[in-house]
Image (spheres, rainbow, N blue to C red):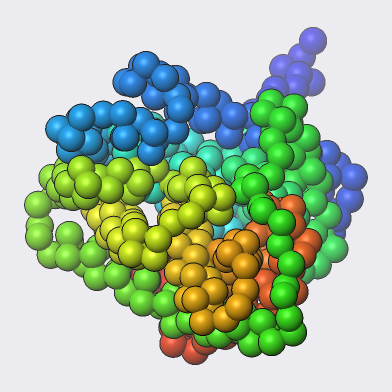
Length: 440
């Protein structure tokens, strides 16, 4: 056989199979990205559990681990983990040339769909070290980044055109969000609202296919149900609509305040001039000091939110945990820890909603079970006030709780919170960085 007649993977391109618009071959690629993205999420979860077992002997949840440790263990472990994570970032990225965008939203919105594989893997390894040692940060961010990286790598391997490569990265991000939160509808809408900016048949079809396949793989691997177990919920009377609307107003002002704390902490670490490793070690020390008295600040907060939903917390304990969780998250995010703030933001909204619910129960003749409704609505409304994606937040809370009864007050509070927050700060926590990149 002649050399000219031979085929090689390097010369193979799907460009001629991918004309503009939605079509079957690209849907097949979207399905591959959905399955591959979900598998990367499963691998990250497995690595996290293995690291927990290696460090602690079991994988029972970060808060439970913190409560089982002596005070000096709670203090030192976050410092050691943050220092190790910082060294991985500093020395690992020093030997890996920067290629492509820093994160998936940047690659989709202002980039060309290129996400560097090696730098993403290094950042994911750094994140593992942080979250397995008590960082108040979400493990879901790296999971989404890894799934988006899979979409980018597959598209570049097959030489997909740039405009379609961005869509393939979006399919990977959708698969990652679906896998992280067991929320296939919200995962699709998240990418549409925050990354794509508009909805069209050309983009919606691949995103849906990727999300569905990812959800099938995750259910096969984990058998997930509702993330948050929602107690029975009913609205006692029509006037409660005004109470839920007021909660939306509170979240609308609290969201920008929360972002201000995160921004000021980040600037404070930058002005210290200590360098990445020292900054992350200092952030870990702050988390360790807080967790000596309040171990609930460790991790992304899933177990604490479920505890708030199903057990009785006094208002002063709720307030203490809320304030210190915000402080711990700000220390981790501001010092340079790799991870997401999406799930800690849900935690803050849940605590805020619980405080508000206790206040309403205290001034009105309602049963204590009603507080759970305010917790759910607080989660969604506060998230909408930070992300500026109200439709995604409504669907996200619904899919994570599987409670249809909460939908009406949730819709109202999310829309109110979003509009108030956006009037205070035009750009969401996700689009703020992209806007800064455009100006550079």
